[in-house]
Each structure stands twice: as structure tokens, then as C-alpha cells.
View 1 (cartoon, rainbow, N blue to C red):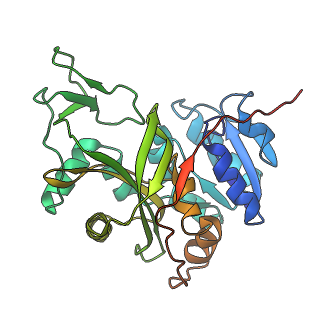
View 2: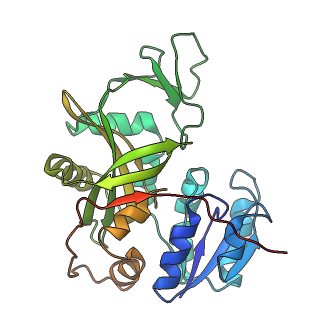
Length: 297
């Protein structure tokens, strides 16, 4: 299959491209920059408009058809809502957008809506406000650490939230859900060496309480394919903070602890095979990251 990976200039794109190749598929990489490193790692590369550009939707609609793309892996939070709008139309043309449906994307991309969804379903989460009532301030719609601050100085709160500052161990939970929205894998990993919102190291741990809460989240919010859920283990228990309905920057560790998720996507999402033989999770598996050079003309 021809699988498209967007934003191939990010530091974590190599793991996704490698997983596609290991599964025996063709990787078509895209980015708004001609100098994106994924250009030299993928089988094909194409420059596309920025996700924030008005022409993005019109361009990408024709692009995926013209390039015979079978599966798209959205990876930019900026573009998730645009892909969600395109998903029903593209699937009629045989292009599978590997992300959850519009209702789920709307909830997960807005931290205030997600907070209220957690409250409605008694899922533990930090206290949150649209006013500057708490020290942690972040955009309602944002990614990574962009726009996040811990401050007691007054700042404009338009399209922002404030949140109580949690103390404890931060986890990302890598989750893979099948075509029936059921979690196949739930892999908690400690986020270590976080830089620009991405973990540069981590370790997979057996955390039954996190797993059980994650199952509840998956029962009230319908996910398709890969998703990563963030939470803290505090003295008061587990508290969930954010959900990214896409491959995460550290999902490579979640796959290494289970199996390559690319074949799972083909079998469970594209071919609609809901039941698969799961692998045992490799608890205790650690991941570190380093820079690798790509030389080119």
C-alpha cells in the first residue's frame, strides 16, 4: 500500500517511516518545507501547503487521489479537523484517513471540551478554568509545549485555559483501537526527557489503574487506530490531562513493546478484522533517542 506521512520534518517522523517500510509498504512523505529530513528517508516526497493555509484542504483533496494514496497518517494537530472533514469524502474514493471521526476530534482538539467530557464521565482530571484561576496556562487548541506557561502574571485568556499544576510522574498511554473502537493495546510509558512537548526517553510500566481508566475513556470517546493519552500519577491518584488522537512522538516505544502497528491498521481498520492475536506487552522496555545525520545533495 501507499501510505502518506505528513509533517515529515519533525524529529520523530523516522520511526513511523521505518515502521511503514518494515511492514512492506511504500511511504509517501509530505511537508511544507523542501528541506524536511523525511524527504530522504521516505520512498517519495512532495511539498504541500501549510495546514493553516486556506488552500490546504483543496490541494490535499486532489493530491491524495492523484498520488494513489491508500492510507493517510495525519500527524499535525493543526490539520486534524481538516482531515476529519475530508475523511468521509476520501473514503468513498478508497483513501483511508487514519484518525478518529469528527466528534472525537472535536473533543480531543479542544482542551476545554475534553475537560468537560472527563467531568461528565467521572474521569479524574485536574481542575480547569477559562479564567486565569490556576498557575498552568495553555491554549485550548494547541500542541506540544507551544503557548504553555506557568505564571502568576496576568495574561490574555482568549482561547486559553488555566489548570491546576500537577505534581507527580507523567505518563503517556499509547493506545491502539480496532474498527469497533475497542482498545487492542494499552501501553503506559513514563515520559522522560521531554523537549518541546516530545519525550526523548521513556520506559514501559505495568500500571493496572491507568489501564482501567483508559478502558473507561475508550468506552465514552470512540477512537480509531492510534491515539496517545496523557496523565499524571499523583499523591491523589491518576489524573488525565490531554488526548492526542494520532500517532504520538514516542509511539515508537509503544510499538516496540508490542508489535508494528502498521499491519494492525491494515487488518483491523482497512479490512475490518476486529479480533487479532495480541502480543504480550514488554514491561520494563526502555527507549532513548539520539540525533542521526542524513547526507544529501
